[in-house]
Length: 197
Image (spheres, rainbow, N blue to C red):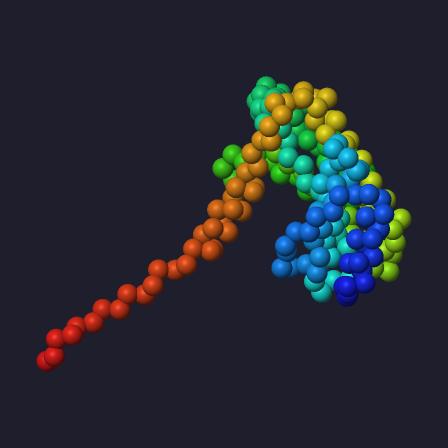
């Protein structure tokens, strides 16, 4: 399981590579670090998480698709549905070939999720028995290259976009569910009669 030595070692490795590190409050984790990789303004944000009760480090990154690119995808979906389906299929295969864990978020139309592609995430676990600086840094690099591959594919097919992140229907639905769960129930009303018989 996680101990302070793991957290300290990971921080030391990341700092030695001059990576920007920020802490994120996460009650489910012993440590949740936000890391910019590669260093500098062009770096992407990655989460490096040591979950409670597990003997692994989880490295992941999420990318939202630009609003303009989503609009182009909607046109493509309507004009050439078969070609659109093939494009999405190829994106999935590309992520599988990268040999990492991934997820994509598609636009909703009722209960159907035909698109557009709204966001994707890539991740890799590193179990403690294989945790080295080399394994951690190569995981960040592999995930970064997988993200770049998807980003370039989207830009090639759907242009540079508008420079504004588009919506993610899955996140909006999760937020609504979470808010409804957090709404406290109405206090029970007790009716009484204070008239003495």
